[in-house]
Length: 235
Image (cartoon, rainbow, N blue to C red; front, side, top):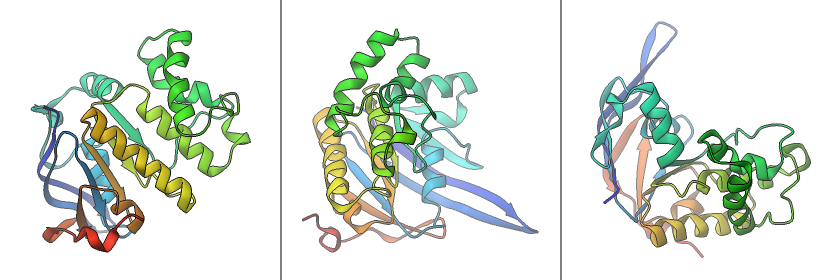
């Protein structure tokens, strides 16, 4: 059973002469086939916690366990392999390669893992079609809208059939219709494939698609943890 478990995670930064706790003793689980939203305002520590969950940032204290493996104890090489083969990560700022086609951008992770170009493209095309970009395969980021770029980033996150899906504001550049379609897709992947999904957001609509919602404020999970989902009900 694939599950993400974070235990007493702490991350501190120095700001001027002051030490700030961006994440302050957070413990939470995301189970197989469960979509969990981490809700909170900008600066609450959501993205920092997501980067720690992906192994892209090391916590100062605490553990991050996926399938029983403590990611905080992995070597740099082990961390790269874990993210390439196990994790789908939707970045808020996309991180697409300028001048490369949507197809090449979506296939990039597989190419880095040694797939042939034809095999990587064959795996990427169905995901690009599923996010509504089947007619835009040859377009570069410069030729695409912000919403289209976001959908390329989502296809890239899903192309390796990940065991864990992490999304940082996945609807931030989308209109309400595309947002609902994207969140529906993430929820379908979660439930159909049994993939644990953790998304961070300040969008109430996004929270409404989750199985559970946690609220993070000033780096801490709020008392009571679970938010009443009726407040964020999807239409």
